[in-house]
Amino acid sequence: MVNKEHYARLIEGVQTWNDWRSQNPKIIPDLRGFKLIEVDLRAANLSRADLSGADLSGANLSGANLSKANLSRANLRGVDLSGVDFREAKLSGLDLRGLDLSGVDFREAKFSGVNLSGVDLSSVDLSGVDLSGVDLSKAILKGAILKGAILRELDLSGVDLSEVDLRGVSLSGVDLSRVDLSRVNLIGLDLSRVNLSGLDLSMADLSGLDLSGLDLSKSILRGLDLSKSNLRGAILSGANLSKANLSKADLSKADLSRVDLRAANLSQAILSGADLRGANLSGAILSRADLGEADLSGADLSGAILSGANLSRFDFSGINLSGLDLSGADLNEANLSRTQVLGTDFTGAKFTGACLEDWGTNSATKLNNVDCQYYYRKNGKQERYPIGRNFAPGEFTKLLEKALETVDLIFSNGVDWKAFAYSFRKIQIENESSKLTIRKIEIIDDIVLVEVNIPERADKTQFHNDFLKGYQFAKEELEPQYQARLSDKDKEINRLFLLFNQANDKLGEVPKLMAEQPKVQQNFHASVYGVAGNVEGDFNNYLPEQKQNLAEAAADIQKILNQLAQTNPTTDAVTEAIHQEIKRNPTLKTRLISALKAGVLEGLKTFVNHPLFNIPAETIKGFLEAE
Image 1 (cartoon, helix red, strand yellow):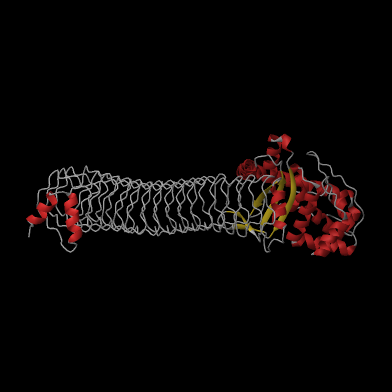
Image 2: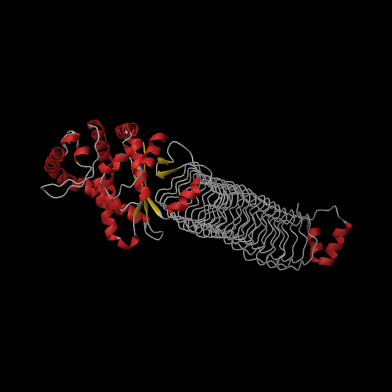
């Protein structure tokens, strides 16, 4: 019941009122509905007083004690509330718009239905306050203390929460989009079901937080401490995380597309399966980070540190990794096809099962102590190298260092040597100053590898593409023309054999090269000139079967030499080509073994009349004995 005595004592003055309160501490003042318009109540003790529905408009309450008081639905328009103690007070239904609340203590006050839109709550203590359902639109909470406050289901869009202490605050279901949370303390924050898209959290402390699954797209998070935070599956597309600390954070399967991560610390972060397409990672620290199966297509990695990172099975195809630190990185089964690694540090990295198709290295690329058992020359785990074995320790590094001056031409189903000679000679003429030569020919099963010496600064990809283009042209366009002339050539060669046999009838007739045996018909073991035909050679007396055996072996060898003649091969390349042909061709091997047993192997030189053939019989003998 309204107590007029209480009202009368209050009107007598603050000092009289405070003395009476001190003398009667158990009395709860009942001032419900009273009009206290423009009353001076500075420093008044109104704790536990019931002022519900009272009209306090224009009153001066600065410094007053209203702790645990009931001001529900009171009229506070134009009231001076500076320094008021509202701890645990009931403030339901109040309209605090336009009031100066500087220095007010609202700790654990009841704010149900309070209108705080546009109110300046800078540095106000709202610890433990339940602000659920309160209108805080456009409010200024800069530096406010919200420790332990409840902010469920609030619309805080556009609210300035910079430098606010939000430790332990419940923000479930709150809309924080476009909110300024720069330099906010968010340790221990419950952000479940919070909309943080477009948020400014720059310089805030979010270390250790559970932010999994949150929408933080386009948020400003630069300089943020998110170390050890759980951001698994979070949406961060377009966010600014430059210079943020994300060390040991879990970002697995997070959407980090187009994110600004410049100079961010991602050391030991978990980024497996993350979407990093178009992300800016320039200068970022990714040492020992787990990037397994992440998508980095279109990402900027310039200046990034990836030492010790887990990049196994990672798709780097087409990405520029030049100048990066990838020392100790795990690149097992990674796709490095068409990547640029000029000056990249791979010291101690792991490469087993990686694809290195058309990757670009240079002399500054560091490959010391690389661990690799094998790699693939083509994407899709095609053309494993080495075939049928693993690299010996250090062999992979030596191979790559040598590759700086070579290009490998690989043929999976045999080589059309006529087309090869045409294309190679064409490129030699077009690149006369490059001094292109064949370094080695290796034949393993059905795969033929031709290793070409090429200057280090030459465009190896361009050379490779130009060669294949010319090779294909020769196979498809020139082969029909060649076959049309082949029949006439075979008849002429057979006629020359007849002349030769007539001149050497004591040696017996050398078998004619029949049209159905092109590998013999196309390559005579002596020099042939003109249409009329001349046969040159210095022949010893051999038994007919020995002579036939050497002639046929020479024909096989000369076929290889004729195909190599226009490629300007080195002596070692020729020797290796013959060695590989002996291994590949069992018929040739048998003929040479027969000549070796008959003691006439030295006479092979007589039958192979070609300037490229300068292989000692002892070398061929060594090839045969090794087999």
